[in-house]
Image (cartoon, rainbow, N blue to C red; front, side, top):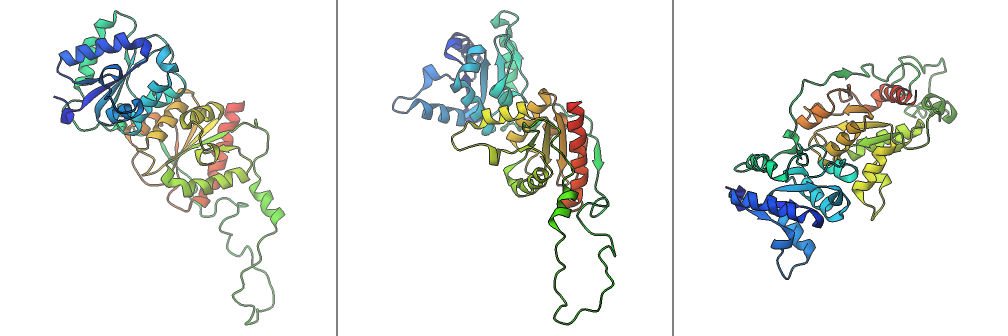
Length: 349
């Protein structure tokens, strides 16, 4: 019955072991194999090795969420590992407590079973039914965990090469022509001198320090798009925006998930880089989901002509998407910055 004889990993706090055992018993009586840490660890291996091996070889993981589980680092790490390896997760909330922090980041895109209003045993049929959906199929794509919604509205911007007048880009024809004497042979081919630095700052410095000094903009992206993100970051910071990207902000040894959650909680606007690499990125999905839950302003930038995954399509359905892939990205900077200013003004009004 199980996928290649894989078992169901049950993640729980030690304080919730009795309920974890009940879930295990009802599933095993229905023909499913289960893995419980207190019962199934292999002697001779470290506890961490047992956990990693068991999750890696699991068909799915059931997370019993409670106040104690939220505070227990091991449960959080087990959920993170399952998500990162693409293993389906069934979150089972056994207490009426708010899902928050890292667990909201990790489990936010999954459908939950609320199992705390009635006697616990009354939820067993629902648990069995949910588990049964994952049997006999291949590893579920997390992008299919949410229902499809109508196409997100799309706006094409930056259609004029070089952007509006006054923006450094492609100069207007004849703009730099001067009536001078013909160049000598030795002078031909020399590049024109760069514009004065002060003048260039005037054109780029279109944003002032009128907003709070905290990180205003969180940029969510796939690591494969790092090159284009760093170019965008350079321009935004040059214009005076305070931006946050994990490559520059997270230090060695720092908890990655906690740093992400803290940054999203402090930012005002999230820019989502939509590309072939990011549409199926687990981290991007979690970041966007957390931003949606916090009701942040979101600016999706589609840098490639790709169809969004169902999850991102759902999460971004209420936000206008800027298509910035038909021309060089530099041509779209005016429109991007104009939209960022609008969103920041709205949030600070």
